[in-house]
Length: 258
Length: 340
Image (cartoon, rainbow over all chains, first blue to last red; front, side):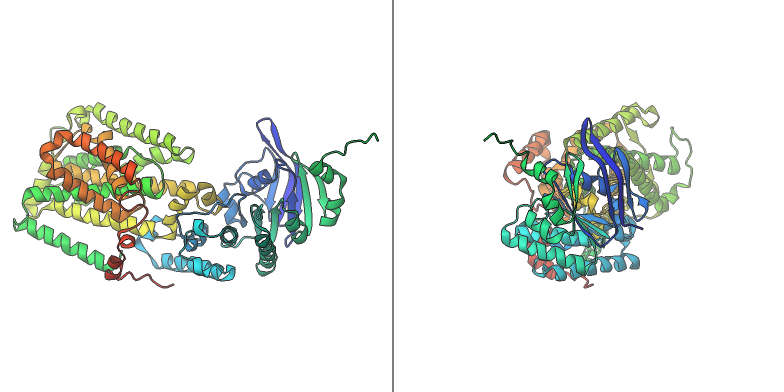
């Protein structure tokens, strides 16, 4: 069974066609890149997959189970985690708490148990904290455990956001423009991080990116969208030479009347 | 909460009750203490919604009214011979045991009324939700005014005889004791809730609701828990309030009362339990000290709000606790975070 299967996914915002007839299969273990000019519908695809929008048409299956239209926290609980284009961390909570709260669905206790602090509360709280400490260690954020995310340098905020997504033990990780706003040094670190995560956590990663250096060096497969439609699909080298891709990015070549 | 502070609170409670019984603490001081307790419950429970969850509820008095009326009606019906409900349902002495049960039922009733705000909060927030809370406050108040069975606008009384029945069984200041217990429990429940990973989910909603939703926080459930816990506690405070006064009328539970609680929350600081407790004490005592200027209360209180918003919008301790502001307090109270 494939990990993620998207069939004929179409989404309209009123009269605007944001995504049209998207088909995609992830068998598991790939690193897929989704690129396209601004407004091509890339983030909308992510929002559809995570349950922010209910697709107008089409199916999204995670391990054979239809997830289209499920509420986001349920989709996450099934194993899809994501990061955001503009970093969305909880800034009045510490770095450590950020990594704990993300595991909300794993808690398995409610108001009553949190007040009485029953053994099961302590057990699950301990488990959540252990996962959070391990991630801090792995991501090299140990020193910042008690810091607030907004005080971290940009690159580390990204790293923390990716860590937060990892804390839910996802099967599929969606990264929405992870390199946006990074300086060249940070970009190199990000490339290493993505590669390392892929082997360390044995994850399937799907990323949206404008930064071609990142896309071409980490992805083993690329899909190109333009105006909601798939215009190319293939390995980085194939995509680079595709005429429609070049057109979408650079426009039509002016016929020359020399 | 740290065991030392619990011990200190229990000792303080025992001292106050003993003082009340030995007539060292006169009935006026007792009354002020009971008001302080009730205000602490009100401000800390409102802080859960306005501070921790970052919504703006301006209708807290409505939930207080629901609790006050349910508890009062049950008590008068169960334990006294009244013109409305006829002879008492249970022997009046049983009020000693059943009073906390009626308080709890009042709290549950208020928590259910909290759903009136919780459910709209799934789709709206901010200013729009604030208007909904205001509307709910008025719906509650006007509904009670139109329910002639329970006195309508004239109010409802008879709680005094319930208290007397309790006192005739065992001669202790019952209501003072219940106020102290309820205040302690309310703080204990709120403290533990907001310090658990589960409870911090509501802070995550305040900081970034979309991120909370995507990181597996069931935002609807958390909003329901927060609103119901907050309004439920307000209901319990209302039930106690009714029995301190012995008489309630719908006019007590208007936007004025809600504003009073709001001032306490914002004075103490949003997202700070110790701030709410401290400001409830300061404001209650302060208003009592200047009782002779009572007519100016509704000039002074709003003025305080204006000054606060201008010069210290985060309140005394915005998003911090007493132990963060004065670290030595934390050391003294041996903050032992369990190592896990």
